[in-house]
Structures are given as C-alpha cells and as structure tokens.
Image 1 (tube, rainbow, N blue to C red):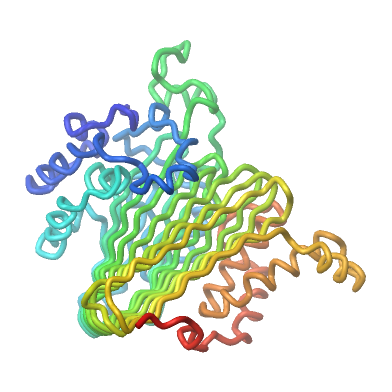
Image 2: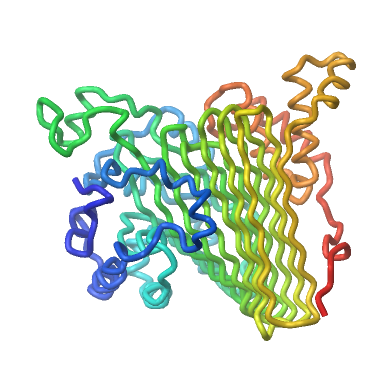
Length: 493
C-alpha cells in the first residue's frame, strides 16, 4: 500500500499489478518521467493557484494498491448487460472486467484493449506516445498519469473506418477505498470517424468498517499511517487521456462524470488534431467532491478543428475546476470552447481557458466562453479566460459571466403556476439549452437524465429505463445547432 505523498520512481512497482509483464522500454519510461514528479507544481500559473480547488487534496491520504480483487455492484451488472453487445470496455480499478470488439469491426482493424495489452501486442502503435510524453513536463498530475498508471484503455480506429455505434467505456473505482491512475490512448487514423462515450463512476460507499480496514491492510487498532476512518481517507481517480486525430479524421469523445460526492476526479486530456481533422469534446460534469478537468486541444494541421462543450452542475460542497485551452499551431484552424456551470448550496465552480494563436496560424478562428449561474448566495463561481495572439488576420473572442438566478424570472414563472423549485429548473433549462443544441440527441438525453437524477437526489448512473426512453424521444425531435458563431466576433488585423 503506497500513498500519493510517498510515491516515487523507486516504488512504482508496488502499485502495479503483480502479473505485470510490461516491456523494459515502458519501465524505463515510467522511471524517467516519475523522477520529475516531486519537482513540478500542481498549478502551472500563479494566477490559477489563488482559485484552485486542489487544497482539498491530501496526498498522504490517497492510497494505491496492486491488489486485483474486485466486486461488481448490481448497478454495474445492469450497465454491463446494456452495453455488452456493442463495442465496449468495463474497467473496475485496474482490472478489465469486460472488453467486446465486434468481429466485423475487428476484421476491419478496430482495436479495443487495455493499455497493458497494447504495450505488448501493439507496441508499434503506442511506443511513440510514451517517448513524446517524456519531454512534456507541465504539471505533476500529467506526470502522474504518464508514469504511474495502473490501468487504462487503448482504442485504434483504422484508416477510413466509420463506426456508427458509439464505443462505450465504463470505468468505476473499486469499493475498497483505494485510488486508481489510468492512462488512456485513442488513435483515429486518416479518414476515420467514431464516437467514444466514457462513463466515470466510483464505489457506492466509503464508509469505514472493520472489513474495509482489513482490505486496506490496517492493524487491529487502525493506527499508524494507515487508513482508519472515512474522514482520513480520500479516494481518487487520476487520468491522462491522449487523442491523436490524423488528417481528415473525426472523433467525438463524450465524458459523463458521475462519481459520488466523496471522490476526487483529476483528469488531463490532450488532443492532437492534424490537417482537416476534427476533435469534439462533450462533457457532463455532475459528481465528485473535487472535479478537476484540464483539456488541451492542439490544432497542428492546417484546417484542423476542435470544440469543447461542457455542462457542469455542482451542489453541496462540490468543487469544479475546469480548464480548456485552444492551441492554434496550423494555418486556418478553428477552435471553440463553451462551458456553462450551474452552482447550488456552497458548491464552487472555476473555469480557466486560454486561446493561443501561433505565428503560422493566420486566418484561424477561436471562441472561448465560460458562463455560470448561482442558485443561492452560498454558491461561488469564477471565470478566467485569456488570449495570446502572435500573428494577424485572425478572429478571436472570449467571454465570461457569473450571475445570481433572477428573482424576477422566478416570480414570473410562479405566477404561471410553478412552485419555486419548478421555476428554478425551467430557468436552468433555458440557461443550458443553447449549449445542448450543439450536441446530438443521445448526448442531450444522457446529460438530461443525469441532470434530472441529481436534481431529485437519485443515483448518478445511466440506465435504459422508462425515464431515459422518454427523454430520448423528446431529444430526437429537437434540432442540432448549425449557426456559425464565428460570424459575430472581433477580427484582429
């Protein structure tokens, strides 16, 4: 059992699977990258440090284990039945419980496997990502996901393959209170098109019991540096996701984060988009005590496009720390970020974003927007957008706003027969509706379902029940936004 505070290049092996048989080049890469872990900051910019939610993270109480004993909850069993006939992966902790790659797609070259299998069987496809990351030293959590990963998935979409059904990736932390580190890689080859849906869950309970103490290796008194109470333990999910989008390829990556409110969820996501390719990030953030997602879209090729659309709903004492950066490297690239947050009780939301337009990125267009609505006086939200423009003949705009919910609107809707809670919900629906228009009907339905469950206090888990079917039927009748947002913003000359 190793804590995050004691993790180093010298004890990495103690958190890896006992069956670990990875190549020597992986082990060497791990140690080389991990050696830089302690010397890097958690926040790169001093400006962000003032607002960060990482103050709730206690590294000495984050525990990692190499034990592979797992149990599947009834909810996950139901979820497995619903996804197992489509391209899918179910991971619990560091164990792959289920992987299904339809034979007809496997024959065409689609690869769906664990990162451990990829390092052995598909080294020619993944080796360069380990070598390139060794020179990327941004912050300690990127280093953590690059070097100390215990599990993860690898998805390879071959040239010109168009996959109609989404590839489902369901991940859950184990129920033994230990944390996990995942490294995930997606490669979309030239001319391919696919959608990946990632669902993030955590164990149903972190209640400390005598059985849990035994699982965590505690002595009879639960003393010393081991975990003995729920208050002392923190369970965390740490992720590094890398997407490589080759020329003319299109990839949609949808994340539905529904972890319980005791969990920490920290993710670094990067997309490298080549000539005339497109990367679309769609996210619904609902769970976790601290949810810190950092997304970097690097548009290297001319004509590359990227968009990042996120909806955040925070209640109780949750903290959402969302970063989204657009890096325009290639000529005539297009990027946009749209984030909307709804914050309730004493929850906090922080949005950080930066548009960078490099010297050779003339005629590029970028739009960055973060807006938040506060449902009561105890809630808090901040937005820090920025621009760095190194060339001319580009269009670039950023905007941000934070406001309390309008009491006059509530009063008006209550006069029409709604109660106060119903009026608030209608206002929130109107707030996020322009954003959800940009998503397809299935994404809108999934996000609406989780939003409804959270508002009413139900479990945050996708299910193909009657409520979901009703929501999906409504969303299919709606339209998808096609208006060009770049027609409205300022042009730098």
